[in-house]
Length: 410
Image 1 (cartoon, rainbow, N blue to C red):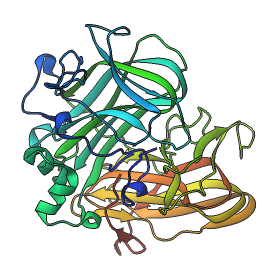
Image 2 (cartoon, rainbow, N blue to C red):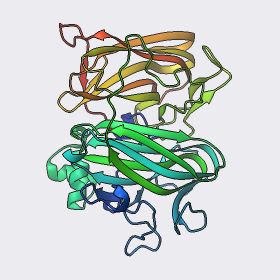
Image 3 (cartoon, helix red, strand yellow):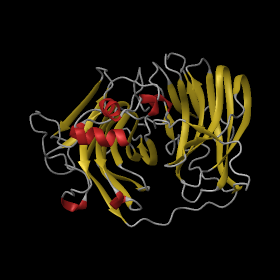
Image 4 (cartoon, helix red, strand yellow):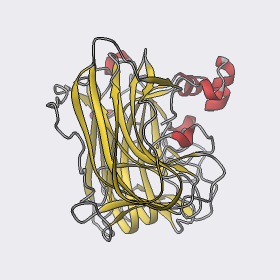
């Protein structure tokens, strides 16, 4: 999506925080109503069946598109976790950053709402320099749903629905990614979980690579079960995982536009506290205006009717753009509500804190907290010591200061 490193050609898609490739084609569609053996919702989760009429493509799966010659998608019969086949993605160049990934799309309905969705995959790293990931996303996405039903692509579905590209009502309601950057491993089990939000009609599973080397995947499954109660945060408690980037940003989603040489990287030479910060650099070579940075998504059910505050520390060298923080609240009726304009930093400056607040909508399903800079722009930005906290209940006067924004293509 919208989603998210999410490399897409459309400007709207570039507004999202984490690598969303082009929408999967019809071959990657599954229906939750038709469950394969083992109660997994995925088609061909062991990759043993071949797509009819294709020499090697696994049935039920699709690949992202980047139009670069350095990436290779394959079906492997040598390195497997079980059975005869696994899938892999290999990349030889990061000149232009992309999130190359395998994906499957599932059309789902009310029977999945409120259930805990668990996406499990066995992975193997083979010379990775960068990071690989598995990702589970839940969307309200009418165009993708109808594109699968009609057997066409997303743009054609929008046309038939009479919806302009900039008016696409798609909205991400649930999101969980697990990164891994081990250069070499044997087979390792990994999993991500989300509670399927009310209003979800499309789910995506993705297995991908950002960087060079080869990542292999096998024995994938997506199952539904009873969901635990949503997490509650005490007033003033920092909601971020890895707020000081001490685990090299592995808990953070990354917005990395496909500009030649652009980088979002952990930095052990500059820090506000601790040993690490995250550095944004070389993001001046782009034609489409977007953003670059890091963020985290949160289940918003226990944040409804609460005011939340995002703070981050910035340092910059010769920044000819702006660095800032932003909070987004996603709800079916309220749409995407974003925090108002905050202080924006530019130029060369030492560590400085910037904060913003947002009243979370009463129907919110997902909250994104983003720390970022405008792109393209010259300069280097460092980020450290982020906090996201509940300030207290939304004032009775309403949501003064909040501002509705067009739905972002995450």
